[in-house]
Length: 170
Image (tube, rainbow, N blue to C red; front, side, top):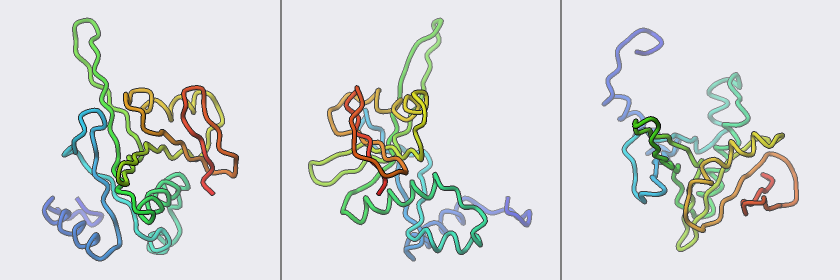
């Protein structure tokens, strides 16, 4: 349903997304199962090629700094030659005989040749709880590729007890 209460088919939306991508207005990031090492057919994420155009179109009304930072990181990785996907880590458990699935998102899985990085965009990490929230997905990844958290402040890179690198955006 649109703002004007008109029905819009999924095919029409898919076509518009395709047109916007062909016009270099947006870029799609597919979801990638980190453990299963395959793409997932669940919804993808959309990033703007130019955040300034996005803001101008919205008349600078919806400026969400966390989303803009994530978009900037996505674009920077692509400009540096990386293939960038959104990572998904599935955790299965059994509770009282009932099988449960829980999914954790890795903001970016960046690949360039043999290099692979798992990257979380965290606007701010002020508490231990926020750090745990940002690293939940990392804790469930079994491989040894570098795991990086990018925060929105100027800082010297540091490594956590678990070996995760925290760097400033700038």
